[in-house]
Amino acid sequence: MHWVCRVEKAVVVAQGGGQLWLFGGEFASPDGEQFYHYKDLWVLHLNPLKWEQIKAPGAPSGRSGHRMVLCKKQLLVFGGFHESTRDYIYYNDVHCFSLDSFSWSRLAPSGSGPAPRSACLMSPTPDHSGVIVYGGYSKVRAKKDVDKGTIHSDMFLLKREGKDDQEKWAWSRVSAGGVKPPPRSGFSGGVCVGAGGRALIFGGVCDDEDEETLEGEFYSDLYLYDITKNRWHPGQLKGVRSEKKKRRRGKKGGGGEGDETEEKTDESASPQEPTEIIKEIVTEDGTVMTIREAVPVARAESESDDDEEDEEEEEEGAAASLVEPCARSNAMAAVKGGRLFLYGGMFEVGDRQFTLSDLYSLDLHKMDKWDVLQEMDPKTQEWLEESDEEEDDDDGDEEAKGGESEEESEEESESEEEDEHPAVQAGEALEAYQRRTEAYWVKLARANMGPDAKDKKVQKVGVAMAKVFYEEQEGA
Image (cartoon, rainbow, N blue to C red; front, side, top):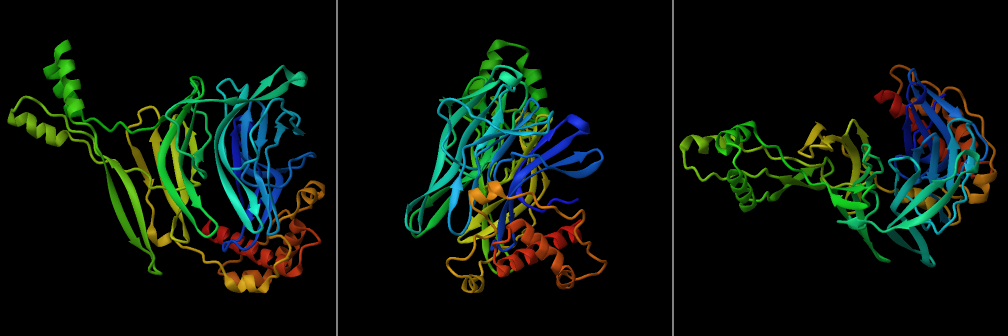
């Protein structure tokens, strides 16, 4: 059995040889014209590699933009949104899935909790007695056909009290100290680093919107939140110090206190100054993508000794320039062994969106430099333009784009899915595959969208699903 390609939050747990749990999410066609919100629960067994759908009653309604974390032997799901062409709704409910009983329950925490939102930071506390919720995004209807977006920057703690069947949950507001990140949405993060308890966010975007225009400022900065100390601080790179500098200090310092003071004075006299490299990449359609990369240049230490040999060592020992990921939003982030891995994301050029496929890693203990594991290939970047023809074909009151109302989502019965999607035959073109398997994909789209969806919309979603599956199989 296969799960359909979608966007959502996943959680990795250690039990059963390693598992990746995935709930809900949103299917979107490549042109963004058709989408559907799911409420199914899947687990990917990592040993052996196999998908399994978990069917349990009482699941949250279909949604995307939610957050899910592991808290002891429970998966906690918070927030998210469901949107159609007619309306939208944002959530602030909390649901719990037990990894022991494989059952869903809806929590009813006491206290004043967060306002409805999606795309927030959600991280377990170090002792797994609760979770931290920070930031997020929501929108409300300001007036007819005009929506107003809100970027949240508040923080809350959802804490568990009591034991087992007598446990209770309570919300409380958190006022964090330190250097807080500027308001933003679409950031990456939500992981707990080490026993000390640090959550992090990277990048994101702050939209400046009015009734006519929407412009976004993208970020490439890293912020860490110390859960134990309740303080934010920016994740600044320290740079790499050369071995020759270390050896020279060993010769001259002699362990004396005066030498140490002199070194500190010299360092403060020559602070590390970040520079900015601007790359302009021209795509095949002539669009110019401007990418700004912050480059902290490691400082060169000045020595009072004018000896020619020391000057040569100083030049050879200067650390190389350090390249950071460019500004982006919605990148994938994961932490393994104290190292942050950052993949892809998106940024905008004018009214066009570009997806990224580069991969970076950063040692969160050393904080010395980003390692480039896979560079971005500008030839692979493509933008998808909205189709005016599609809009002309649809009426203003047409069925929601693959979505359902909250009540319909709650009441819909779980549809039976095929064990296998139709395989792509050797040398088969996309158009041939779509013609051969059209009946299957239309049937699957109808099962997902419900009996009330218009045939024309179901047909479009089926074609889009077939294309996504075909491209996945060809790229495998």
